[in-house]
Image (tube, rainbow, N blue to C red; front, side, top):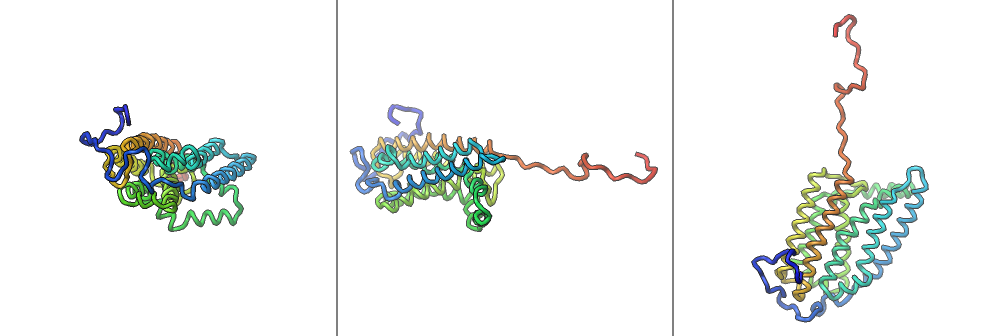
Length: 301
């Protein structure tokens, strides 16, 4: 946040930003982000294949009478593009040696890309495109006890925001970044947890349970508070497990703070715009559209 006064201010004017063990040069410590892992190239190819498959299925559905929304197609392809961009140059190589690139990558993987993918309603498209055996298989997954558990709002929040706390407040960060497999698993967790949380908050696809909007707003508010708190701690250099030069810590904190706010505002907007209030049924006694039974003969009204 060099030259800026509107960023998250360090508590108490704390100026010692570099945690113990950090280096003075502009790169991450040895063993941290010195590799890209095995996932990035493969992940980018998989994402592109899924995007092509989605586009082909959407084109077939558009030829039907019911059609398929161009907005949903654009949303999914935008999400897939952001997901691939997180692994490809310039962001992928930047994330290998700089905490700011690492944070930008996680913002794309865990928040912005999942929003586009979820709003594309891929499960609905799959249900409309698959044959009866495929639809039964998808329905079985949606009815599974596992999905009922993980799609509970507070469980989805724990997997998403809780994973952020565990990563940056424990030795897991250093251990994961020092090993290619650990690095890849962190990326995978961010994508899956971000997709699950976004689907629970604003997903148009069928879900085992759909909490009421006020409850989802509370859960989203807690997630916003967690992201803001972690970014404040990072900006102040109070995360001893994240060793990086001060300029990288502050830059990464800015990305988490402002980028996270933008992503969460977009998510809240998506939730409101996709909300369909449940219709209240009129009691039969008050239903004026139904004919009233005739009274006794000769009875006065």
